[in-house]
Image (cartoon, rainbow, N blue to C red; front, side, top):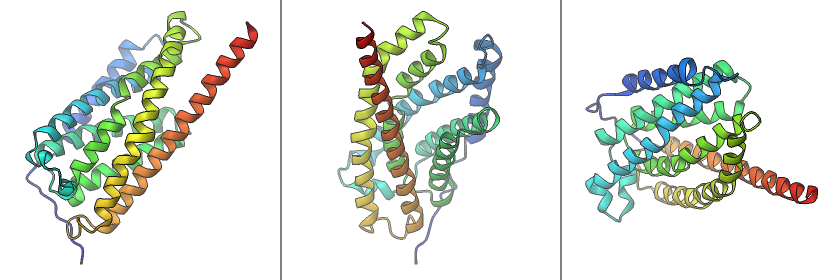
Length: 252
């Protein structure tokens, strides 16, 4: 019979991080982007900037300084969450919660992002509060997922203003090829490899009695779906970019 264990010794920092991201969002909405027609779009990018790269740094530090990280065997994929790992999960859950509220309020028809945020929160929450194990594997994927965050947010913000500001249009055009390439490598190559390692580990039964089958299987489905959608997204952007380049050449 499968069992799940939760280590209550790690106090949740989720409420504090929720207040932090909410404050950042409101500062962006009422101060930094108040001159924008759609200030909520800038505010969403702002909290993403405050989450993405810091999450990569925090997760990398935790994984590199955790003793088991130096062991080549993948048993860490099912080991108990440390207090530091739980803090990183709280940090990310707070961001996704505030950004989810943003979409529900301002962009309720953007079903893909809403479902993405709900699914991500499900994975982190079950790891943090239900089973208390497996954060090591999820933080590895978090690093890959957020590695492109800074570049993506700069690209997105430039896209919002490309029709109003000449510099924004130039920045968007300059960033597009390297951003698409970086994104393709991370999401299209590194992501699937990490997911495969997780699937092989959990499928071998190494987490039996620690992480229930329904939990790790649902994680794999959610993460695999997210990677698939990400690949489709960047492919669509590559197609649009080549189409625009070909069109500009014909005009010349």
